[in-house]
Length: 86
Image 1 (cartoon, rainbow, N blue to C red):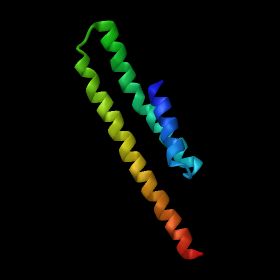
Image 2 (image 1 turned 30 degrees about the vertical axis):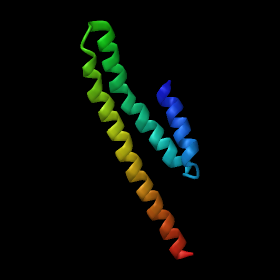
Image 3 (image 1 turned 90 degrees about the vertical axis):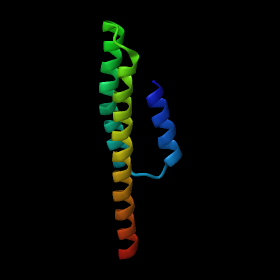
């Protein structure tokens, strides 16, 4: 729930990005949430240590940030090329 709320706030804060980029980022975030939720359920069911939740959280955060950086660089590059050709 918190991830969805934070994603909505971030999306509204950035604004002006094409719908395709925001949709791709949403899919990546959903994919990154799966290992975290899986590990959380393992902690709840099998009484594993809670520190095992940190690697999936960091991995998901890293995947989201790297993909967002790549997508925004491609968007800016494409936008700059359109401005030059006009």
